[in-house]
Image (cartoon, rainbow over all chains, first blue to last red; front, side, top):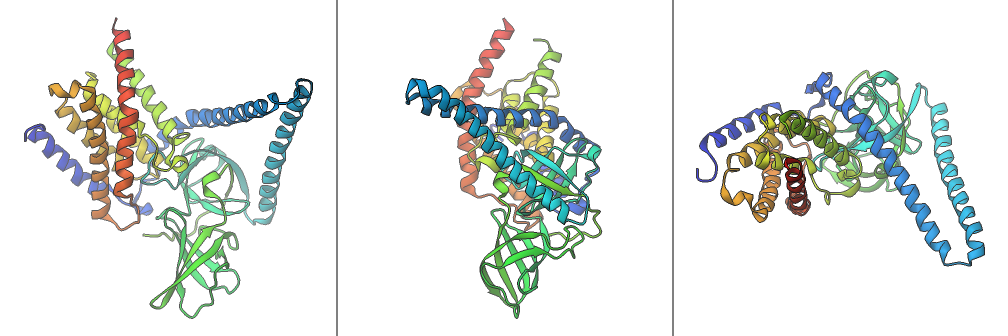
Amino acid sequence: MGLFKRRTVIVILILFFVAIQLFSVDLRERNSQNPVSKFVLTLTYYPQKFISSLTDKTVDIWRDYLALLNVREENKKLREQLNSLRQERFGVAEIKAQNKRLKKLLLFKDETAYPVMSANVIGASPSILRSQVVIVDKGNIDGVSEGMPVASYDGIVGRILLVGDKSSEVLLITDPVSAVDAYIHRTRARGIVKGIGTGCQMEYIENKSDVSIGDKVISSGKDGFFPKGVIIGTVTSIDSKGSFISAAVAPHVDLNSLEEVIIIQKSVNNVVLNE
Amino acid sequence: MNRTVNVIVLILISILFITLQSTVLSPANRSFFFPDLNLILIVFLAIYTETRGSFLLAAGNGYMMDVLSGNLPGTFTISRLSAYLLVRTSSNHVYLKKIVVQGLVIFFATIFTWAFILSIIKIRSNSGLQISVSEVLIQGLVNTVVGVPLFIAAKRVHARFQK
């Protein structure tokens, strides 16, 4: 075998076949109650939380520093005043932006029929294979359970995939395994919104249905996961395949810059997955 | 350093790397231009560590990747364990102590790991869980560029502690 021992190659081949047997994208076949997985999630919670807050603080300091550099070029006397005003304004703008987001979240909370809790995004997937996963700072002890829908004030984000004691993993709607039963808001044409990594695709819309670019897509509530009427996204292109129409859907939520989300404490009745 | 301290340090580094990879260095934020620190650590373990059971650390590392990337059971655990075994087998080779060769090992370990995972996905499903060859090659290059200086730094730190 030259560089590699024959025994190693045989062991790797055996491992490969074991991996084939173990691998499943079917969430139903996964043992999500596995205590070791939950332990890993709990183990990484504190460092993730720490690094997440450290990053936020570093960004704040960097912004303050940049603001200072700009002010330095101005008159020395005015510089101090400007500096403090700019910092103050930056602080106020940050508070305003946060206030706006939280107000919208509160509004969403009032609108939904289920109890909800807000959560902060503290991490994301460490792998390029499945990067459509984020980690939030609410877990088992906060009442989160697997399958609960996750949204933001802009619409559906995903659902809880794995729950640790203090943190949980959220599978985003853009993940290829994700599927949401949905309506076209304008015409009530029904279909399934599946994740395609970079966005979503609404499939299985009947050919006779009226679908146009720009139509809003909302959840139907019939998959047992997501409550009815929550916005998913907007139709960006349409393709007719056989007896069905397929529409590309741009998610309404900017999933790349999630900061705060809400977890809808809805028990899961039925599972519809993109398998 | 005695063996216990060695193991504790390696476990802590492992947790630190997985944390960094799931926060500031997450591919969700930086696309595929991010180093896979955990894979670099596994190659390091395979080449340098005398610690018994370092393969368990490699497997644990892979398991953490499995859990944090959507609970894909066994995918990373087994692929990384295989990469570890492959590098470990050839770790007595005299050229493996050269930094250029180590860079190549990191590159090919990345390619091997992804070839392993993508073969499994291809056989088992059409789930859309795919990454392109160019993404894998870029990650291989990024891992090499980041991994080689890390190896040099780790060797120096290790030598200092040995004194």
